[in-house]
Image 1: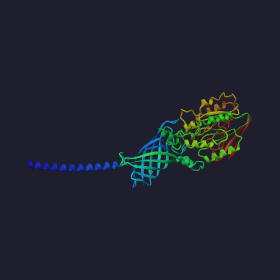
Image 2 (image 1 turned 135 degrees about the horizontal axis):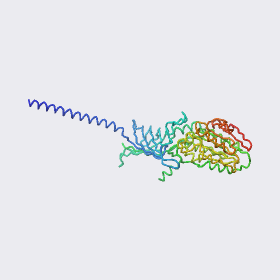
Image 3 (image 1 turned 180 degrees about the horizontal axis):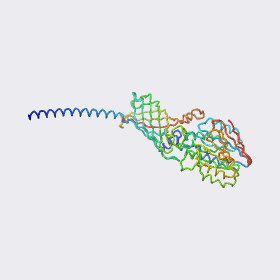
Image 4 (image 1 turned 90 degrees about the vertical axis):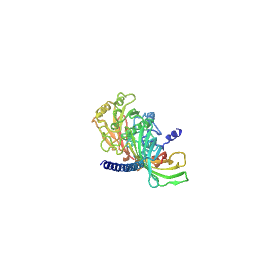
Length: 210
Length: 258
């Protein structure tokens, strides 16, 4: 009776143990899968940019993806220092870049002859609203003062970091010419506003970690 | 750091469209008022041009400048405000560059569009104070910021203290002309103050008439039924401007097409 009971309980315990281990493995596999999925969302590049109507300096984290890594999405935080009559301001920018070609110059250097971008910039501050404040009659001003839609064209040169003592994938230097929605609206229909009047220049560094 | 300084001095590098730096000229109104007040104004006939609302009409304001320069026989030009549409720094620069080709001095009032974003600070930088005045041909011109909807109570609009400063203004002055962007009873004006605004103007010595822009059309109103006429000008896109000829006994105006 007692041996039967022992046998039964031992079998029961053994069965429970193997079930537990299997569950544990499944759990860690599942966990690994979830971690990997989230890991894909880890930002893989940073940018530091000077000017470009999104701050004096702005820094970003972002992603590059696509078959030939031709797409980039970056989120920038920029600042405008206090100067003249102007208070300091913080700006935020969401930017999408498309780079159709990449030319390998040699083992270390490659060249992006054309980069194209669109970006939305928001500036934070008392006088910058996105929705017409209530005191105004409907439709008094048609645009959001704090939001600018920009387009840009540029070029970049990249240096591979794989063999260098520096950690990371590559480092690039770029410049961009950009303009925004309100400048375009102003230039359209006015021959006296020339192309160079509405264009700004920016310089930047892009660092790809992995 | 030196590099940054070099870069920041270059106009191509823009930190934001509402930046308050990189202006070729500052204090434009004060500089031009000095020119106006240095003019030989011994004749008793004053002739000036009044226009306004030139926002985003760059080609048209170029034609305006050419036309006024060809015409001649004008003492100065008053722009009634709204030189920009969005209050952007570049718009201020573009409009200044064109207006600066005028052969005679010009003064520019602040319009509601010029206030937007950081535009109010750009105006202070490029043109100067929101309220200003000058004397020509023994006539006091009082130019007032009336864009109340754009400001909070920290900035008095209209500024009664400023206006009251001209109540006893008799030294070398025979008459007054009051200029503003938004007229009384418009959506932009602080209409709770209209009666007081009118009261102060009524106390002024020999007010000939008042001028305003903002409504984009030619109008003559006697807003307070007291015989003080308010003239409103068309916007620049309608290709006209007003020419006022003022003598001690009478004044006349022409709506001049260009």
